[in-house]
Amino acid sequence: GGPIKNGKQSFSWIHINDLIKVFVFIISKPNKTGIYNVTSPKPIQQKYFGKALANTLKRPFIVPLFEWQLKLLFGDGSRILTQSVSVFPGRLIDEGFEFNYPEIEDAITDLILG
Image (cartoon, rainbow, N blue to C red; front, top):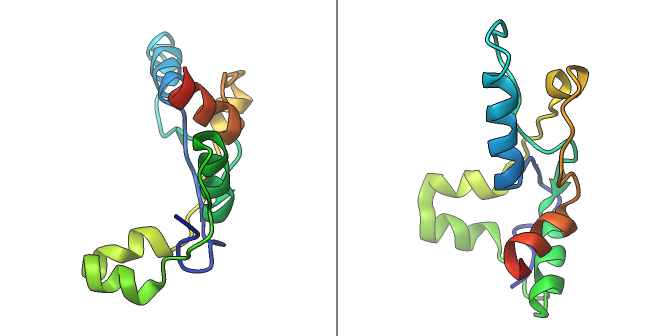
């Protein structure tokens, strides 16, 4: 694979184990109400994610996927892959939550290689 569009679109992500850990963290505090941003504390650019994934899989990361190709395949749904949206878990961090996988490289390695 390669970067989608120019690869600069930012996105938030979270390891499945941290997601479960957040649910337990919030449920264990029954007096808590409101909204939590449930993401890793380190949003990344798509090209950085692609390179980390390719490195873990020992695959090349060269050929880009252009926006017009995505529109041809997915229509308006292609915006999911071409727009930037980053969220920061400020409330979780303020309340003392600690992520096991704040770094994308560690998360990908754990998910793929175990």
